[in-house]
Image (cartoon, rainbow, N blue to C red; front, side, top):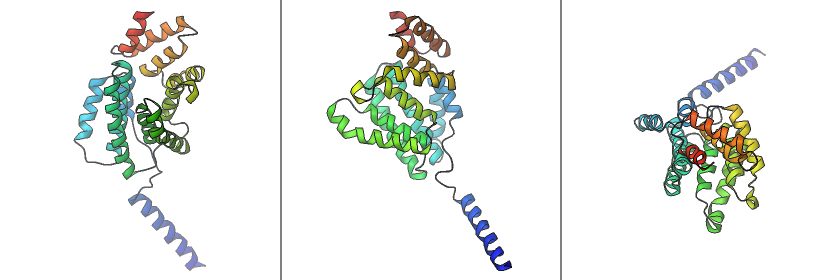
Amino acid sequence: MQAGRRTRIGFWFLFWLVMFLFPSATASDLELDGIQGAMDRLAMDEAKGIYAELQSQDEGFAVWGQLAVLYNFFADYAEFIEDDLDKSRDFADRAIAAAEEAAAYNGASATLQAVLGDAYARKITGVFTSIRFGGAVTDAIEAAEALDPDNEQLLYVQAKRYMLAPAAFGGDREAAATSFERLTERNPNSSLYVSFLAAAVAPEDPDRARALWERALELAPTNDWAERELADL
């Protein structure tokens, strides 16, 4: 009996020692506190400062993963704020490369899988590219859902998909409005979330859309998307 007890104690000691020395790939996701604030405010100078700092650090899951998130944010900024699709797709390629590097350290990250799905979706411009990249988008999104269906980056990518995809491929403006409503409740300081909500409700409720565009601009004075939409109202 004593020998069996000692064996069990020895097993659990070795188990926790291994977990301490070699953390499980499924143990955690990316920490994005500093990055998230810069993204919420569309603070490009701040985001570029974080990017420069990451470039000076040793490679690893956190560094590559945060670079992937930043590249995807830069792609969003280029597409929606600067209205530059070519620049956005260039950043999408960088996001994919960084996410794949991070996955080599820790393959199980809902945030990274969501970034991959979003970045691959930017590469779809027609039937041929839909055939080429559609499977990668679906695989990444499903992997993120399996890991953490409540992951904020995943919910954002799903909401954008409702907003931007043609109806034949799952686009649904009403579902987009509902999804971005929930995201703005979860994170009311994101100028980009508020902007998407404004765009989603604009056809049915232009007065609310105006108030939301004004709020988006208040949250981020550099939000040229909101400024353009307000000028057109």
